[in-house]
Length: 291
Ligand code: G1P
Image (cartoon, rainbow, N blue to C red; front, side):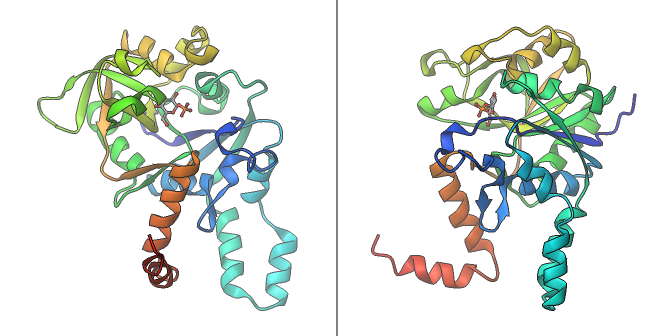
């Protein structure tokens, strides 16, 4: 078994109902955050973290993702003809980003089931999972930070952040305690998917980045539907915890839930302000609003 994390799985088979009507036809992973589709942020993060092979779990009606990462012959030819070399480089850059494989999730049975669909493409090695809705702005890519912890400790690592109040019930929530040697590490003893606020065992919410050992696949095969009637990744990881150590990791960086309308607006404002081309005029525009 390779001990290196070389592959990243992107569950992208969901219906995107939180973003209707925009996602009636367009996959939510293809919604633009400033000028790049959401999924491209995750793919770039994976590559910047040393991942060599991207596996996207898709479903019916999600072909736009495959086209996006493919060569665009007509577009490139047109840009070349018009001498638009910078845009041509952008288009070519997207299609040569990474080695990408696609696998279909035939039924929307849940996040755990989506990850299980990648079993054969991952094989017997540790791997990452990136939920493309969760966009993380960080100096060191979030996944790279997590792979560093995996390399050091040799066990599965889940990204986590503190969530205050009733919002916690939208997440997988960890049970455990802070590691004595590293305040960013949380030693898990249990976890629960989308608890009611009053039942939440802690404020440590799972965020959409995981580094997992391949044993998870066999456990997901045995996982029965849980919260929302879906096969939950959290339930599979809880089973893994009975056999192996699992750590929570408070990453350095800011996470946006771009699968949500308000989260997407917040991400749009902050990412646009950071851009050297758009930032200054956008800041001036915002300052001029009578808020
Ligand atoms: C999924 C996971 C949940 C996690 C969340 C992070 O939920 O099931 O454990 O906390 O992603 O974004 P979803 O947002 O897909 O309902």
